[in-house]
Picture (cartoon, rainbow, N blue to C red):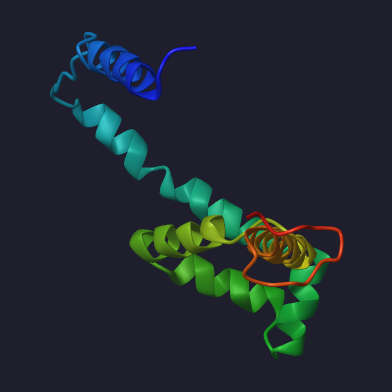
Length: 135
């Protein structure tokens, strides 16, 4: 069995050799005007995305609880500038997709269990009866 220093040396040699591998170069180029205009017109799809949200029943009911009709909200979105629509669409895209928080609670519980298990094995705590502290 090789010694730990020899294993570390081998890993370092492989890592340093990997650093010397050729990397693809990045090239800059001029952007044509028609491509810039095409990206500017992309704001209409963001506007359509926000408008389509008001067609959903859950969004309509939430708006009505706040005292705003869906048609009034659509009119407000249509009155916004392209930059405001882009910012609002970016905020909607950054929200987490669904989930009730149960998954987060499950992960936190698992993390606490693992931490308590490790500290129990190391002898810092005595929470679980099925572990023996390491000497």
